[in-house]
Length: 143
Image (cartoon, helix red, strand yellow):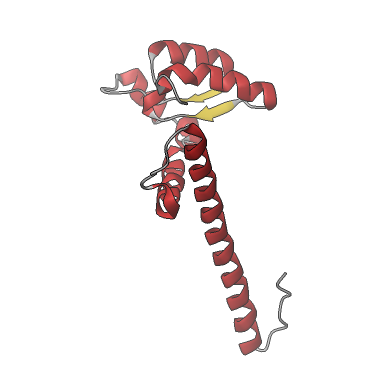
């Protein structure tokens, strides 16, 4: 999103995503996407719209945001964790100029984060195989 704010992009983003993935019925947003108009539009497009309200919550909003479906579908804290992981792999400070360079930096940061995750998986598999040998168990094949 190079221009505009989050509020301006919520509905077009959902329409584009539903064109690619017609089965999309729910989406989780952060507070930056909230506006009364967005809430109405997204309620029309989605079965379950997880769009928390900015600022003071009315009683109705508190009930809606503390409901089981809303809480279960709230994915934004996990997304923030992923963003933090990207910051640790090169996106904390981007010194590139222009949109193409910025996109390249984001792509490289995603690759670095994925390589780090794969190394943890492989290390865990290796340790499990070694622990199995120590305990006299048959080793698992590690690909």
